Image 1 (cartoon, rainbow, N blue to C red):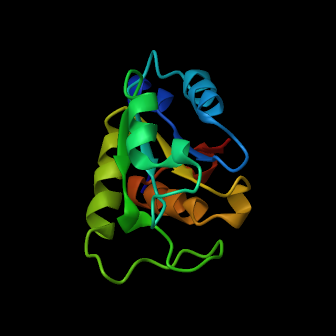
Image 2 (cartoon, rainbow, N blue to C red; image 1 turned 60 degrees about the vertical axis):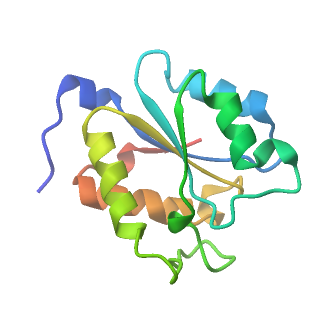
Length: 148
């Protein structure tokens, strides 16, 4: 049964974004586009191995870049074991369900959430399935997910 949201909660959204071929300026532009000045926002990095050959996409650098605007969470427990769009949860962690529940609760409390991963095309990335699971847990319309 879908949950009735307050006006403030209705403005909060679940977003996904892939940084492939992009830089921090693009991430900051996306964050401003989704209204971080108006609504609390969390960037949840859902890469299983949150590292990159490009220094700017390492967790500590992302955190520093977005810290003035949003909270950044590195969430490898929501990462993908496989290298496909199908989400295979990491077997070595029990934190997956806990993190999903926490992100769902934060969304329902009026926070916007941006799921960050590498793949530019959301159809080719597991973050789409992570978003679908949060939507299922929140009991909201799947069309509320915005893939940027």
